[in-house]
Amino acid sequence: MTPGSKQYLPPEVLARIGRLDLRARAVVDGVLTGMHKSPYKGNSVEFLQHREYTRGDDLRRVDWKVWGRQDRLYVKEFEDETNLRLFLLVDGSASMDYTPPRFQDAPGLTKYDYAATLAASLGWLGLSQGDAVGCAVFDNQVRASLPARTSRSHLAGLVSTLEQPRQQQPSDFLAVLRGLAETLPRRGLVVICSDLLGDRAGVFKGLQLLRQRGHDLAIFHVLDEDELDFPFEGPTRFEGLELPEELACNPRALRAGYLEAIEAFLTEVRTHAARSRCDYQLVRTSQPIDSALVNFLARRARLRP
Image 1 (cartoon, one colour):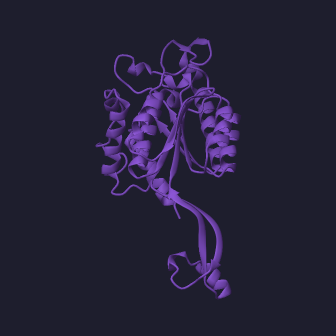
Image 2 (cartoon, helix red, strand yellow):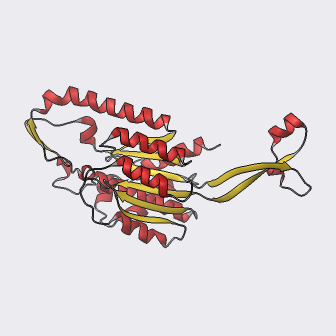
Image 3 (cartoon, rainbow, N blue to C red):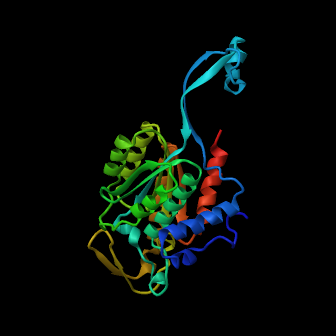
C-alpha cells in the first residue's frame, strides 16, 4: 500500500471515532499495514573517543577511515546507546480549534483533534518499539505534560495528557520552546504539531535553542483547507479565535492578497525550518493522518545514514 491509497483512513472516518486512543490505534494499524517495517526506531548514540583495537573487539566498531589514513586499527567508543527518546509538543492554543463551515453539520477534526491524533499515533509507534515517549500541550505556557517513559502502559497517560481541558489562550512559542530546551533531560527527537500561527520570530528562535541543545527536530505544520485555499464565497463575517476582532467582507476582494500572504508565510517557515535543520511537513486536516505519518517515517528513513 502506498501513500495516497484509498485504503487510508479519511479524517471524516476518524472524526466518528470519539476516543483519542481508538483513533490512534486505527491510524497505527493503517501505518503498519502500509509499511512492512517502521523506520521510526533508532539509536541515540553519542561518539566519545577512539582507542586502539585489541583482539576480540567487534570489527563493526573499527573506524576504517582512520585505518586508511594511519594504517592502524582504532575502535570507536560511544558514551551511550539507548532507544530513541521522543518528545511530542502539541499546540493547544485557541487557533487550533478552528471548525470549518463544512463540518458544522457533520463530524470533523479540528486542527487540535488532528494534531493530537498525530501525536498519540507517533507515541503509540514509539512505545511499541521500546522508545521513551513524553509529551506536552501548550498555548502561552505548558498546560499539561508527561515525562518520557518506555512502558507500553505509558500510552494511557499520553492520551490523558492530550485530552486535558484547554485554556483557549494565544500561543507563546518562544517561552515554551525555551523552557523545553532548558528542562528536557537529554537529547532526543522533538516533534512539534502546530499551526504555527503567532509570533514567528519566537518560533524560529525557539527552534534554534532546541538545536543548540542537540535535539533532532520535526514539525507537522497543521493547517485547515480553508486557511490554505480561502474558498469562501459571498458576504462572510470572519471572527478571530485569539483576538476579539471581526471582519465582514466580500472574500473575493481579499482572496488574491490572502493567498499571496499565506504563501509568503509558508515560504518563511520552510526557510527557517531548513536553517534549523528541522524536518518540516505541511499537512492539511483533509489529509488522511496515516498517510501523513507514512510520508514522515519514509522520509526519515531516507535521511538516516
